[in-house]
Image (tube, rainbow, N blue to C red; front, top):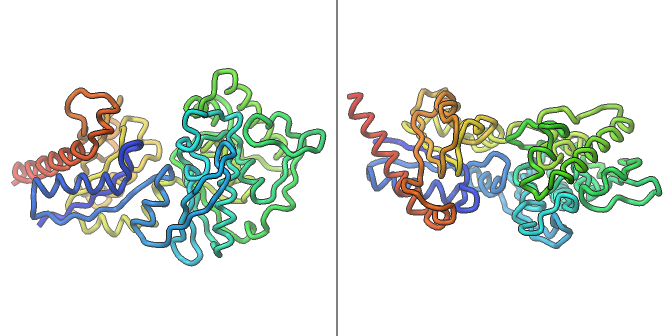
Amino acid sequence: MTRVLIASDSFKGSATSVEVANYIATGAHQADPTIQVTTVPIADGGEGTVASVLAAVGGEMRQETVIGPLGQSVQAHWGMIDATTAIIEVAEAAGLNLAKDDLDPMLTTTYGVGQLVKAALDQGAQKIYIGLGGSATNDGGIGMAQALGGHFYDAKGQELAYGGNGMLQLDHVDLTELDRRLQSATIVGLTDVANPLTGPQGASAVFGPQKGATKETIQILDRGLDHLNQVLMDYQKRSCGNLPGAGAAGGTGFGILTFLGGRLEPGIEQIMRLTKLDDRIAQADLVITGEGQIDGQSLMGKAPIGIARLAKKHQLPVILIAGSIGDNIQAVYNAGVDLVLSSTVTPMSVDQAIANVQPLLTQAGYTALKAFNLDAVVVK
């Protein structure tokens, strides 16, 4: 009996990681009813991280009313993995999906993220994982720190307003009232990017456009983040701006390092550890993974590549199913993937692909098992 492990990221905008795995599993069973399938929901720190981890390892889903990216009230989900370990994600409190057509990184805030951190501390969390993908913000984590007791003043002694707009007016900071529980807690930011805070590869230049920033506002935001870094250097006598991942989530990575005293780690590596994926893969004969879009850039901390590399430690075949396949796919093969399949086999629009994600992924799962069984026949 063939043992198949399915561990896919979500197909953003169309299916969660749980749904993707179930659709692929259905098709795989249709191709070979004798197989044994194990599904492990996976995320790399982006949208769906909380749900994926809790679905894989258990724990308790929580909900908190927080201030959203544009100052609105939103219901944000987070989770307690166990009595002392929490997991939250930026996307739930300050995500692109919460700003929608009103995207403006000059105004959006991470205040709600800080409220989720506080909620976790209130529940006794000693270790807090923060997924950093999918943010609509570019405030360097100032809002997050404000929610936890930090103060950021202009030259007149007025507290800065929400968003990236006021960073150039920052005159001095006061972090003496930050929640004291942060000093004994372990804060881990989960990210799939290694961008610094500022510059051509920084938060504003690389991620600003998808958050609604124009060429002009990108320059303003980048100068603002640089100014924030300089002020913090004077205050703390250290700089975190050039550390890998500082630019994640519009500089929230920088905020975790600087304001919360935390650290940043590759999201997929931590998620694989939390879900005990290595032990589960060791019991499989075939690993199927996937993501909505795959290309050479997927080597930068993306979930399917981390899963493929883990599978190769056990010398297992890896099939990757993607909604669309981009450039430099050879790099994906070189990273340990044996076969890349597109779930869209006929020309169609993005909207059509999203509307038909279930049958498309079911068909892809069927094709994946047929390809695996064909290879087994050929080898014999």
